[in-house]
Each structure stands twice: as structure tokens, then as C-alpha cells.
Length: 144
Image 1 (spheres, rainbow, N blue to C red):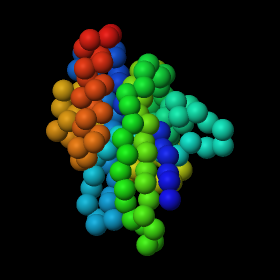
Image 2 (image 1 turned 180 degrees about the vertical axis):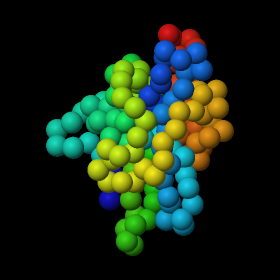
Image 3 (image 1 turned 60 degrees about the vertical axis):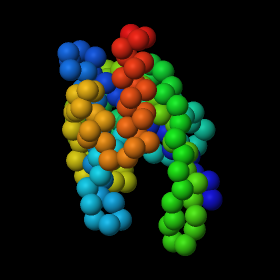
């Protein structure tokens, strides 16, 4: 099976620490994992539009896409099926909203937090998402 998701890194550029909104989920083993918000595109949504919607649903923060950051892919099993998942990540500028998980229709996010961009790599649970965080940080340093 193939799955596609979109999400990414939404940054508050008005704060000197450049905080990023991330979410916490409970994994199948019952452990808390901090990760980047993401989800499946709906209907005819582009990946960028899906990323904006999913980030706002899961974090409460509205964003505007600045740049694509790349994609990651991985395999997992669910209900006896092997799933190949590709996640397209984007860098977004926070343009409004307040941190909350109340608008997450799937109720997957159990917590949400602002994390300084310099601390993001230490906070995220997955190496592939830490790599995306490094790409975002480098883009901000050299492009913005």
C-alpha cells in the first residue's frame, strides 16, 4: 500500500527564538512521541494546501508556505499490511491562531508546544524529522 501525507514546520518569525509548533502523539506502544504535524491531502488538495490545513488543524496555528523542505519516506505495518508512506514537508510562516489540539478532527495530537528552532532537533522523536528540521534551520539562516 502507498500513503501520502503533507505537513511541516511552522515558525513564528516575530519571536527572536524562532519557535516551531510541534505536536505529541501516543504511539502504538503507548509512548509519547513529539513530531511535526502532518496528514493526508483531501480531495484535490495540493501537498502545500494540505500541509497548511493539517498544521492548522493539529496545532491551531495558521501558516503561509514559504518553501518546500523535501520529502521523507518510510515503511510500517498495520493490520497485516505493509505501508510505504511518503511525507512532503514545507516551511511555513505563522500568520495567526493559538496553540491548541482542539481542532484536530482525528484527535491524534494529544499535546502541542512551541519549541525554539535551535532545540527542535533534540525534541523531535524521529531522525528523519530531525533532518527536515535541520534543512529548515539552514534555509532560514541562509535564505531569509
